[in-house]
Image (cartoon, rainbow, N blue to C red; front, side, top):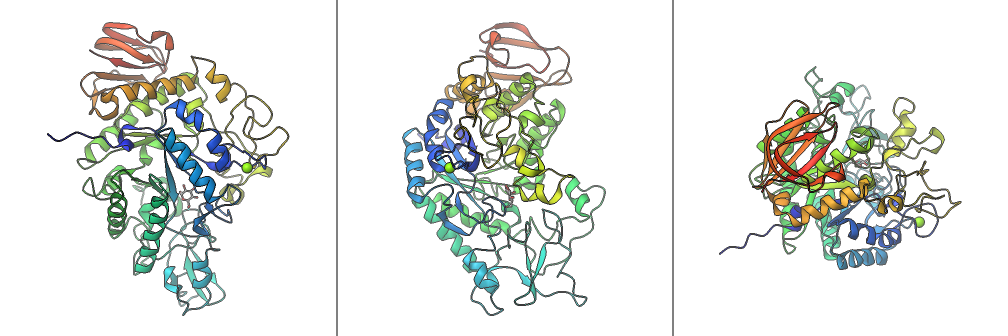
Length: 530
Ligand code: GLC
Ligand code: MG
């Protein structure tokens, strides 16, 4: 008889740590690896199975770690490789695995590969990056626009050629057509996998390969999404190229060669039909791919249900979704979906933890932490600095984690200026919510615990259930039913027998249902229908 074995990354819950803002152990204002080690008790209590660490590797921080100067060295602000090993070991003792953030699309301009590459046209690593001549008129080689706005090319005086960068000019794109680049990354994978990491979150993995002929992108049409319209072009040739799948298959083989327990989760900001392709045949490319249509959806029953149904329909057999509402680039869902309303935030937590797929919480989601406005003078994100006031950048979702209602928020010592201001702590902090059984923190904890003891919630099939307007209800497996009232009015769902296991109104936990369940505005329930 074959044993049915669910991999940990499918049954578990992931949690993104943004290290510089998680916990500061040495009172220098920056969160650090020792800080994460000091907070493992919190993550263990919460019931987290794996943490994804935003980059901890050496970086001049033009883009806060996403401009890597050495893929195998730890950024000194954050700690040392010994501390990293201690983190993996300490987390492991608590049953928590650690995933790294890998940034293969580009390096920092300070990476020694690029220092060599830009030094001359005949440098040994010249072709590790994408260099091209100006047009006859002296314009950039083609019309590509950087995802951060402006031309994706910068002229380099030393050799008179342009280099490609899909983000900041300080982040030159690697040339993924080059076999030496591919094998250099194989070594980086092995370096961390050998150290015991459980896998990688892979930064913008859908755009690493570009058109070999560097053809111009066609103009955007009115059917294109917001970003294409903003940039005036459809990103046909500088991303989502067919050849990227060769690289993903190579990484999957390498990752799976490590005892079959490691996982890759890709950052894939694309529509659902394109997203599905990054799973390959369901078992030969990414283990999981972030679903951006879901993150960016309004908090509306019909829209969210549509995205989830489409995902369920289009993903290949065997593919496993991932669901997330916040990260270090997007506004935190407690603000975006929840608008600071605890009922809405609670409903969003129920949604994230009860869909079929791996929930990925972002630090602070568990206490319903919203964005914290950061004034122009305190801004750290290059995008905020560049585009203020039209766009305030991503600092508001990167502010430090409030552990207590006290100066420094328990993040750093009182009186220390943290790298980003922590803002008003108020009741939204871990300590106060720990002592309040009605808090978002306890709701999150209890839902994770319920998920752990209920195989249906981990691996049971998803099936939408007919529900009145504004209500989204679905079954998981044989006997779990989840219902969210995402509307301002009371609602009733018919034909429901069973018992509420957890409700956002915690007084309803264990309520027996005979025939109907009535839901107040923004109320959510998880029901065992046996
Ligand atoms: C990804 C990261 C983002 C970064 C960008 C460039 O989108 O999540 O923070 O700025 O890639 O590396
Ligand atoms: Mg520190």
